[in-house]
Each structure stands twice: as C-alpha cells, then as structure tokens.
Length: 164
Image (cartoon, rainbow, N blue to C red):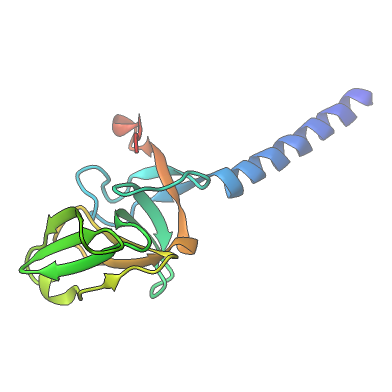
C-alpha cells in the first residue's frame, strides 16, 4: 500500500513539474506561414523559450494585437530607436537619430504600405519577416512577446537547436 501512495505522489509531482515547464518555460509553436523561410517553414514545430531575452536580429514569437494569432518574425529595431523609410530602404538609427544601426531594403508593395514609424516607444520593438513577400511589418508591444525559438522538433529531418 505504501508503494501505491509513493507512486501517486511521484505521478502528481511529475504532472505538476511538466505543467509548470509547459506554461512557464518551454512552449511548442507551429509555424503558420513561410514569412521566415527558408529557416522556418510552414508546419515546422518549434520549442519556444519563454524566459529568454531578445535582442536585435532575434527571431521571436508574439501575439498579434489585431488578429490575436501568434506570429514568428525578426526584431529589427529595439525600444526607443528610430525607424525611417526612404526610397525603399528601412533605416534604424539610435535614439538621437544621428547614428545608423541597420539598413534593409523593401520590395514591391510592402514599400508603399509601411509608414515611417519614427521613434519607437520604450515598450515596443519593430519586427519584419525574412521574406519580402509576406505581411506584418510593424510594432509589437514587448508584453506580447511569447518567447524565442530554441529548437526545431519537427519535421524530424530538420530537428536542430537554434542559435539566436
């Protein structure tokens, strides 16, 4: 009888620990589009580290305010930096606007739909997809960032740890 009680305690503890890890530390995410191809393709299953810090060029999973869906994009500009769009080039400058940190070309109609953002708030980052043909360029509230991908677990032929 004592062994059954011990088994039940271990089982309950294991469920508790796995629940904490699942919701607080590591979370699965299924890539829903090809915006980050060829690195991440639609249908890939990633493990997201919810505790990881993000920086410029980090790939993040976030909840989109408009659609309430989770999306995968790359951080281009950090809080309090400046974004400008001139002649199809997105420029990221420091807070004072006197030093260019990064420049990226835009293609097609994306160039027409991306407004000049100006200074980014202290609680926002600016994200873009890796593919110029995909939607959602813009600001993301840092409170909506779910985490950073750490591992691709599916498809099995592409299982790998991801270095950010």
